[in-house]
Length: 491
Image 1 (tube, rainbow, N blue to C red):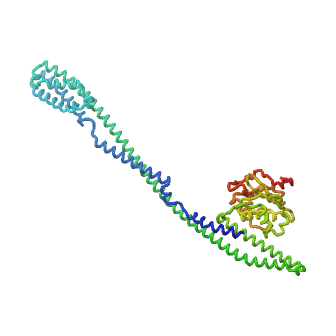
Image 2 (cartoon, rainbow, N blue to C red):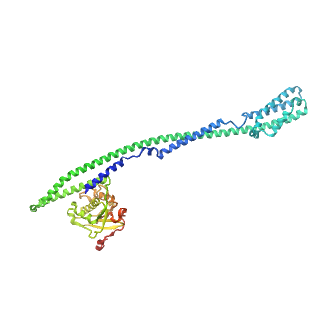
Image 3 (cartoon, rainbow, N blue to C red):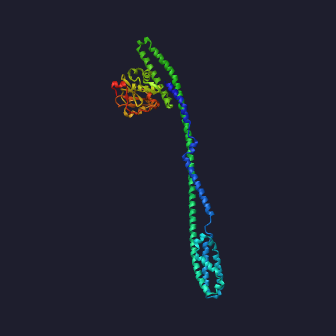
């Protein structure tokens, strides 16, 4: 029965090894969110850098809005010429010899005003700097002949007043134009500063993204190397475990054959009639058979534990009557004289389990052998059967020393043996193996003990009527006893 379980585990091993050999693909690593973020940061930085470069090129290619770049200087020159002409006109009233200077200054002022004509054709500049007063003064100056004005005192007095007004108007216009020009330059400098700051920030973000990307790539490559190394180590571990399992199976098979021969020979010797006169020989043969049975049982336990540890064996659940499972326990060679101590459920004929009979047998046999081993010699070990929430509960109750509450979970750990186990043979694998065999069939094993008087182990397995949808039963779930237990008045 153990070899059957081992064969199932060996058949499932290739699937487990194939799963171990699988590893995380490279494209899943390189396109992970940790690497996509620096890529997005670099792309955004490049986009902002291109935008800033285009804006900077457009600013350099676009001239100032004024049609004449040195327009403030022209207003100042015109105002200065108007002031000088006014001074010459005042001096001319007392110095007739300055007529030629007056005419020359008059024509020079007209040329300065002619240079302002582009301003008149530009609506935005005219609206900003040139008012109707300046335009009217220019028209009056052009309509007058300086050669005639120089000989008329009345015209000179009117011209002086008009020049004073023109000089003041030009000064105010020049100041307005200079202020507007400076505001435009400040605005242009602000735009240039913002563009440069934006470009510098984009370049800095791109460098940060690039450094981030490099670190992520290094981390990803390190992770890939670690993953591949881990896969290799796991594969070696799986290969070693499979090799050890195969060696153990071969050794067990080779040891089982001679042990079986020895046991058969001892059994034939015990059946001889003349052996009754030699009780010492009879006792020796019984010890031989008992020791061989223990060795074979230990080998079965070790092989089954290795099969379960190497990969849960494939199970073949089917409806199994509880009586059939109990009959398998009674026929088990490891029971020995303990068969007479078992108190069996007398009215559980209709209880059918949905389980793998081989795995369920090993789980229940471990519980029964554990109860027989830790109970006082000659004390009964009782088996009960009940139902709870679509699950079958097979209880094994002994009259031993009990299990302390602090140890009731630790006893299901592999190779764990408590203080009360001292002096009793065992490896600490039986209860761990029994619970694992129950769990892979959709059940469990629970324990109840006050720590002083006996213990109760419940093997919980799905009922055949519950189908494959049977679920785990809670340790605190109420147990509904069978009809026989109700008649006997047991809880």
